[in-house]
Image 1 (cartoon, helix red, strand yellow):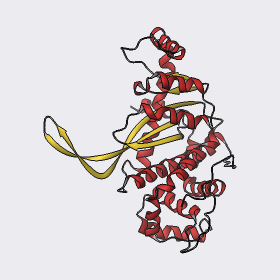
Image 2 (cartoon, rainbow, N blue to C red):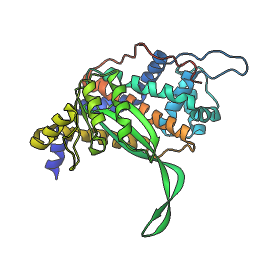
Image 3 (tube, one colour):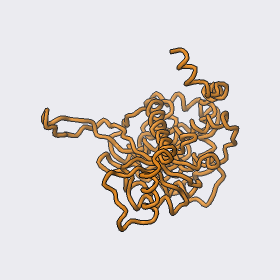
Length: 328
């Protein structure tokens, strides 16, 4: 048993790992603040009651997900962060949860998530796609032929594309639990292609379609997606025929690339183990924002590891980006 443990851990750089774990909390706050300062604009001033600073609100929401605290308990931690200069004002605990329910916050969080992966764009060229479910506090009734009607937790589906080298999430789509995986594929690939060079895209049989293969080929990548047993070559595109021929005649070469798809499963496992597999807000809009924040916080933790493992510099320099002044 001891030899198996040594074999499993021999390739890990424990010096970098220990530094990342011991300094994660401090660097997390600094990276998050830097990301918000570079990518989020100040809100437009309007008449009436003064608005909260949107950078401070998103900062507080991210800290809530990072610490896993209720909003009331988090307030004391926010006062320490205010004294350190990370936020200008500590919002009321009900204001923090109120902003989580706003649908207008979702595009901002989506953009922040994509920007949080940008410092790793020179390390990631191969990507894997998959989906996973996050349970909620709501229930729905299912019919089982063996036991009759049964109440089960509703769940929200997270469709993600991850880099297979660092496991960073490069693009994300969130749907209800009943939605299929394949229609979300082209959105994930196209958003990742805006910031990353795509060499390979890996996915399971749920994404096996002509449209998905052509999408990967359009952005210069090679798709490694297994085919169903009843697939044929008649009236199909050239990409479909090439991939199917490789899958049938050279399985060893195909699966040599495809087995890296398990990295997206590792990303989901790390995300759920560290930040929870359950969503606590009740309406769908707030659940979407909560899940975006979970993935954003996860990406920042990946950046902390990359600082010590690959000696990279974190840079969120503004590009031709959309204007999110109206997000609140």
